[in-house]
Amino acid sequence: MNLPPLIQSFVLHFGEMGSHWGINRTVGQIYALLYVSDRPLNADDIVEAIGCSRSNTSMALKELQAWRLVKLQHLPGDRREYFSTPEDVWAIFKTLAEERQKREVEPTLTMLRGAIMETPSGEAERHAQARMNEMYQLIELVTKWFADIRDMDVETLEKLMKLGSQVGKVLQFTQSLGRLAGRDNGKED
Amino acid sequence: MNLPPLIQSFVLHFGEMGSHWGINRTVGQIYALLYVSDRPLNADDIVEAIGCSRSNTSMALKELQAWRLVKLQHLPGDRREYFSTPEDVWAIFKTLAEERQKREVEPTLTMLRGAIMETPSGEAERHAQARMNEMYQLIELVTKWFADIRDMDVETLEKLMKLGSQVGKVLQFTQSLGRLAGRDNGKED
DNA sequence: TTGAATTTTCAGTATTTTCTGAAACTTTGA
DNA sequence: TCAAAGTTTCAGAAAATACTGAAAATTCAA
Image 1: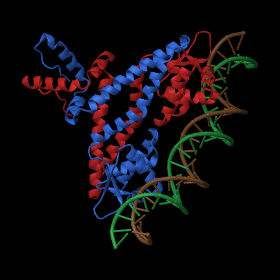
Image 2: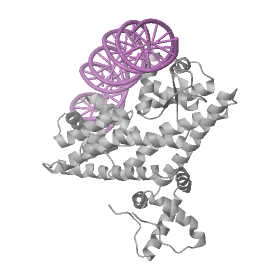
Image 3: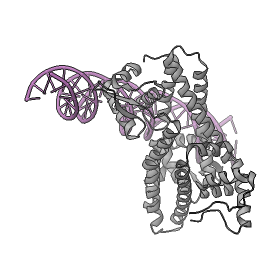
Image 4: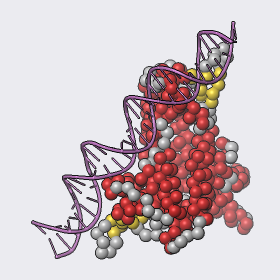
């Protein structure tokens, strides 16, 4: 690996982190490298920087494209393919959430629906179904909500997050709006 | 594996899903089994149901305890250890988020802080630091927010989620109320 | 159409992770 | 204290995953 120490530690960390998230090390490293790079990189740049084989790089880039985490582009007068990550960190975050949703959450919901439909034979199975149903309801609620906030514009999203748990008070406040009680908006820190 | 088909498909699915999330198959399966079980199970029950070795079960249970995802208990008049999952699916969700935070997010923030502190030598490194800083800000915002909503009571949380993107509108509304009242309800850092 | 540049595929190898059985350890009741 | 019941540890086997180099395929300009 042939990188300034500052960037190297970032790249190595993402490699390790990948393992904890079911992503292979090279994929994590390449992603990290592209993320901090100030220009698009081609496969040979990456081989040079990371120190893995050309073919491994090709596989990893393919996987990153499948996740929609990197953009492919061509530079004028150069046949090679160049890769970069989207600028906007929020966009990255949203893409990741969307892909996880599609790949893991949806199949889980499908499995749960199937199991919940079955006719239980006996108390144990009836209980299992009730538990699966609880899980189903939770996952559905959370993912619908994620989809909702995903579609909010970043400005509003950041405001919402900065508000934090205060949003609970805002909620209670708006619920009592029917009475038009003329108090302030309930922020105290 | 010796389970009703309905439960078996659930258990197998969680085994597979585990791999995508950096959790080993047996751990995922055992967790799923305990989740749907209508009574606490001991290690031999688990071996019988899943069909793995006794020692593997022991390891997996240890890991699940480290994640605080299973409770250990003793039944009167029985020396064996019995395991079960918390009843409340929300609690499970929160525990998972907390542990991930501690194990993966915190170390990442520490690494980022370290890298951002370094003195950059050259434009490439300066750019890399700027990118790392963007990531740092995002992660910090999201985790603070998670911590905030984690501490909300389930009732409020469910209301909030059901409200979905409507919360954006409520937010804008209360912000204009805040301005009218002469204060800003966005938290400052 | 050719051939140089580039990317992809794939079979085999290396590495990592998971799983097992045997042995060691712990706990508890007599 | 012992012995029985139960649990954990750990070295090595098995399985899964990642990585490589060589060869095949693709692309593009002439």
